[in-house]
Image (cartoon, rainbow, N blue to C red):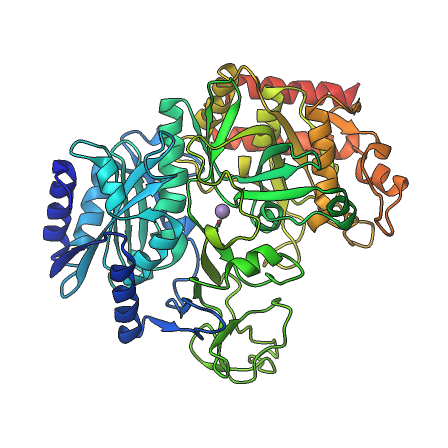
Length: 593
Ligand code: OXD
Ligand code: MN
């Protein structure tokens, strides 16, 4: 299928090391994929679901020891430790190869090695990049065929001398003690072993499109970010695109697929999803930033996804989708999860493969969940009812605003605008979420997650901040930068802001700011709206006074916050740019005025 010498040598090298019985190249044809699905069904790896209700859909279960990304076993490997640490785990390159090659030795005996050529971004776009994933898992092949563009067309673009990111995956023995997700940004190599869970093994996603790509972006002058991309269409047809970075459990997928509230729908507003997780961002010829979503599918969290919380996400899973670790309803041969908004099935199998019904409790009397909290759907973007017509645009979409967000009970106001690009980088660098009662551990503990990239920066975090600052010098028409917080609570701990579709009211203000159509109040942290400029038309229980409360900036709290920021910067070591310390000093001075 290819004459690319480097690729042929790469395949031979790992076929020999892994001692695979044979090699199959994935050409991307429906016939080949269908044959692999049939084989995976015959092996018992996946189960075909009801063809009438969920056409082309399958359910899979992962090993119970293998249900999430493993940050503790995820490594960035480089020659010098300082180029990576302190928030990433580091291994010295040659040590890492030695360790890993010993585990890969013979790991595919008796198995087939599949060669998956894939493109992150539309095939052939100058924004896009090619990866090759070698894997012994049909489940991975089938998921990659949804999440990325795979097959012969990618090899054609690669040609004889094209460069690619090398990825080697084996589920090996699913041994959690020997599980490694290792990245070698200096060599364009990813090695993943002893896992078969999405975020660890679909190498195009977090491994390539964020960790390796963030490094490529630093060297090549662009940005790989953990951001959704959303288009907001006004009644006159004009569309503004925004990107948004949020830590997990902040409703990122819901915002990416937001449905406008009735008052906006009636006026003719529409929203369009370009991406729900990752954005690759470059400076366009017009001096603006342009973004593509390098993926081709959604790898979404299933629990909580319902026709109420996110109809566009649920509808995206209605065909050609792979469900992992959800409940299998045996009566209808369909799927179910907690928070789906429909009654739990009576005759069902839970994510561990046990007979399950919702009355079951564990030894402590706690309800046994049928779906794993991190159970997932892998669904083609093409299924999404609100997919943007620009999704395949080779140059992506131009950005009006960049939005950072987090989950803060009191500190951050509903929305504020950074004073300029560098101040915006500061705002992104201090992003944080407070732990909720839903998570194990103390409530209200602040976890810093700069730009929502904490687990995904492929190099030193201080250098990453510096790259953001450097990018600012290269963008003649910069998008404005904002911070939002949908999670302010009242004294009883109830959320004040309704969230979901009503977040469009805040995006509306953001766009008006970008257009210079609305004034704002300057505070110590940035520009905050005048309460009457947030449209509350049709919102029950929300008055201008409520908005006023949501917009307060408590100086005492922010002074404490500033101490927390300083502590965090110190933890990050001596590569945190001086400019960010200057920003922090300005913040403190403003608060003390
Ligand atoms: C994801 C994540 O799965 O950020 O997208 O963990
Ligand atoms: Mn993500």
